[in-house]
Length: 581
Image 1 (cartoon, rainbow, N blue to C red):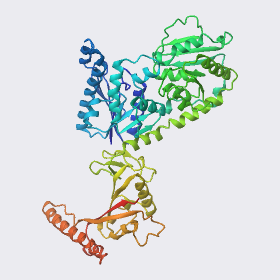
Image 2 (cartoon, rainbow, N blue to C red; image 1 turned 45 degrees about the vertical axis):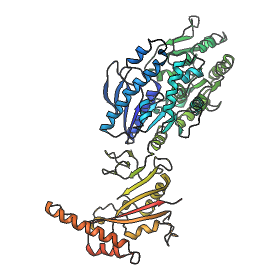
Image 3 (cartoon, rainbow, N blue to C red; image 1 turned 90 degrees about the vertical axis):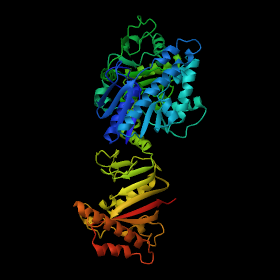
Image 4 (tube, one colour; image 1 turned 45 degrees about the horizontal axis):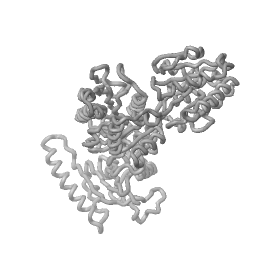
């Protein structure tokens, strides 16, 4: 399986880096561990294209702004279309790179951040997902900023792109609802999957070290330098803090640069943008994390602060309430309501001063760790990606053409690394039309074969089929492999047929229609060149003879007796079962 992410802000040596890029990096590396091939198309490094490997992820840093939109922006009456032209120019670069990547390794699905690629939406060469990180239009509209005609035109093109996506993914329900309202329709193909956070980055200090009383309460605010993040609102509130408390607090800003004069706020300490590792250390020393956004999606600061067991005071906008959940995990205040903010902010400060904040911090930590479980959320992603027509279970090095291959070994043909006895498989209910089990089930006992069949039934679509190939018990090859545990003759498949007279057997669930039974025969498997032709002729003749015998309903064991009579090198039984309703 090969997944390509398109995200301009993927972390790299130079160029814009964003939360969406960090999300792609974390999920991409987890997919790599599961055997999925991952590529990323992102922004240029400086002003140059680059290709490199990031822990198994193939990076193509090539997205840049074309020249046409610049000239359009200088022409009266046409300048309104400049943002749209800019979007189309970048999309064309992306689309050409996708075609180039696909020539070298077939792409199964592309995931775009919200802006997308208009050209793929038109030509539909690649199946694609859209991840709702929050467009410029959505942020402007919901944070009280002016939305101009250029924004509206560009967003309409994005809506067209989103509408044609195979899946719409979002870290929160709130963002899905907002985009649905923008488009005037309800998605029937959406999925909420929280952002991932590398749990190694989350503070794991022993509990007793967290109850040490401090001289001052450390308040933490980190954001990009964007007015929508509510930095000025926070400063206005800090100016109204009771004088009696000012000696007991220390406020630290990271990234945001105040517009108004803050020289009289002696307790405020300002830091420009700092590397991630420095920011994570700052979380550890903080007591309270403030998120005063006018609008937001599902901000990383909430995830990280909750993961560090800190008290949260956050604006109830976007997906933030879905993360915090209830008043046991943090304080939510009404957006832009400075009185409500001060009330919750002061409660948080007193909670820390009175050393009664630990329970809330632990509740927040427990909640966010459950939401961000990277293994679980990665399996959910694989289930979405895996919704294709054909699945080859135990594919090894010889996968069925155009299939998704699953095996417990990391091999070139294996798309999803997963053990066949590890249930459930990482695919959604009703994902496949066909599932192949070619020379797989003979390696398992009857009870495990039944468990595999039951799981196949779950992930098959209505009237889907499983194609089971096993060696015949009377052929030499059935005993060549010492790991074989079960042995079959042609009529063994009847026992899984719902119409079988012995469907009362408790060891077997007869929940299939047996559609067909066929054979494939290799006579002697000669290796010398001149004898290979004879071997092929005899193999073809015997295959036809045995398949004709299988059609004789009045003599059902005739085909098995033929196999026993000729002592053939290899006889393959081929059953096709259809899922019952």
